[in-house]
Length: 99
Image (cartoon, one colour):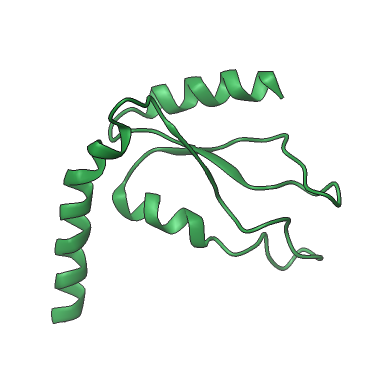
């Protein structure tokens, strides 16, 4: 239980500091998974790159249309500042039209 409470405390501190990530930037662009998805329908890939943003409670939206060397989709995401869901969605919409 102590480890859980410590993890929650650390997450709260990181949420508080997350605003610094956006100093001078409207949103961030980051991978959501490593490489193309695996073969088959059992998995979409390792969600490792999603976990941090989810823990911080930041709005994230997938950016469709990016393909890897085998023609399969690559996971990219737009991450917005806390409470700026509309901004993240708006920029994702603009970016998707550019692809």
